[in-house]
Length: 305
Image (cartoon, rainbow, N blue to C red; front, side):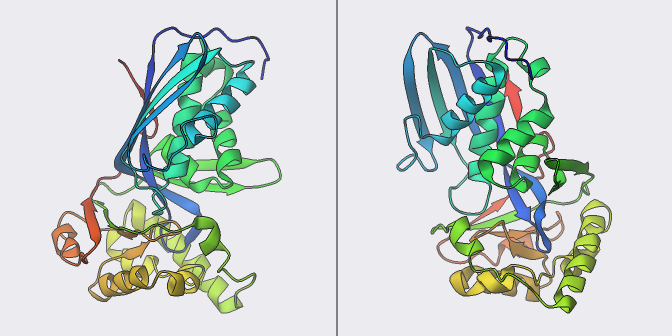
């Protein structure tokens, strides 16, 4: 990537990014689904300093300085593009709950990267989507949420000796997800520590079969989603740390709904259709919010102001 000093646009840039749900049951650290719940940021270059304003989800705790994740992502992108502007004004409107397994950190990272690129004249030519994906995965630590947030729809991502990769997959038009969001948050790092180093061979075989079936079910055979979302890789080991989440997943699945833990939790994702959505939402518990959503198919977008 050329290290030519960038020229910055004077006009502000608005970026919208979707929430995401990773894993989807057995697709651990690989599958991601973009959802129609959005964060927006508006950013402009200023003569000096840094101003960060945050409204909505996480407003009471999100950093309003250089430690802000949107700002960190922007500065990383600017550095790769050849240099930072003298000042920035960042305004964030957050609708994605924080610490709930809906990809809020990936959304902040992708929003910052896309905004920084849009503020640089010729930024899209100098930094393509593959570059953004690699930078975002570097900051996030894994590619599944970043891929879905950046690209939209259903994505399959993986890492090898070369770097991170992702492909877009078709997703059935009839799929209308519901997320059940609890009032309490959880830590992805903490729940990941609950996972064992090894699993029995029979469980590995089960995971391989179910993850393959899951792709087919999400694309063309939603009637098979209940079987396809059976998981032995991560959800059973996290259940003790999230008993209410585990109980809701079990309740929904017993009623015939393809319910899974969204990401590392504690949100529950039910992969419903228009015909089954209302019945699934009737399982809402006290202290939880049931949000009927659509699959976002656009990913991160720059919106003209």
